[in-house]
Image (cartoon, rainbow, N blue to C red; front, top):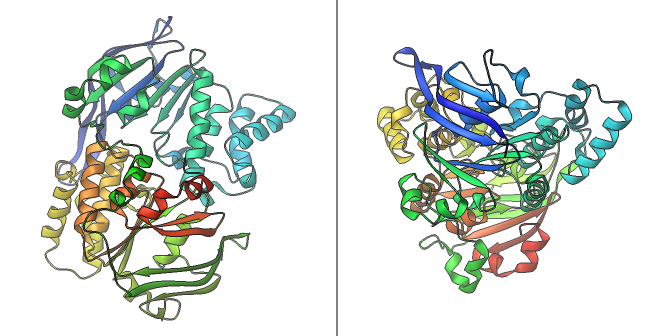
Length: 503
């Protein structure tokens, strides 16, 4: 195969703010040497903060300055810039940052217009890719109004619409439902051996169809080989926090129906905590995205909220958290209509971890961001609370870093730490396992299951995570509740799972 990229002793550093030392250099890649070949399917594995995303940005021409030598099609890069890599498309781990236009249709058209494509061809290409990624109904919507899964779908569709020769996907499946995940798999299969595909992931099993797999750890390349050589080396995977043990297929738990309920999470009471009574909601006077929702949540429940992208899960969570108000209907907390009682009182009881955590992080250091919530709730022993959550999420070493200077997975952990630090009785988690490596995901499962006295609502496409943490599952589709079942009954019901597009 023809050599596409050649990296020789690359060192990539970022300058970031440090709460104590003002500014300091952070290493992203160190002594990095790697060849990548044309039309190769390469999977880049590594735990959170290992340097994977920085490698993707370097290959797409948007990294900061670096030392060492970078060759592209055999030519040494002297003046590094994005212009050199026009045939390379990158989908960022945080896809909302690369969406610029006021509507979905205009976002898809932008890269084509920049390349001088005619109006008729643009129209045809938009229709084709919109159909493929389930975006046609959203063409006139604002990107900011899309669900997390739809946002990721739009970013991928926008990257692919120009038919680039090299495609770099950074955690592409973190927010995708199974339908769009299959679409992406089909596209990768279609492009395999015809385009260069570089997929960045936390999960080893995503590399099964690759030509080659590499592993990064602490900003260095530590291993490379065929999928079988890497995936069958359990010692290597465990040493790099890439355990496969949690990646069991959720349907296998149907063999033992009761085995899918997390031990110790079962509840048996009639203590109703939250009631949705005929709730409807629409954004900007558009069509309803929630339709006559009737739902009861009981104190101490661990509820999973599942369904395809755009089904209304996040909107339901936002209303539950008091961040949106229903257009019609009523939400009651302990029997009191939340529209008629103090928001302040509800905020002391409910917190929500956003789907894109960077949208809710604004302090200058990770430690300060974690402290913000408990401080504003008037809690004492703030330092002890912060230190406890830093330890829970294994992020003590980065506590003085700026939130925007860390990896996507580290942001996720920092945001979750800030939510848990508030100590509220009701916690809403929107895609909490997205961007987390296997070890971090397992630790989060253990933490959630340790909260016996809290009511936790988890919104997720990760059914293994749902199975491990929830004792009840609410399925949503097109703004409606399709099912409300025990975890055991849900996973035993193949027709419901299929109707929700989760297989």
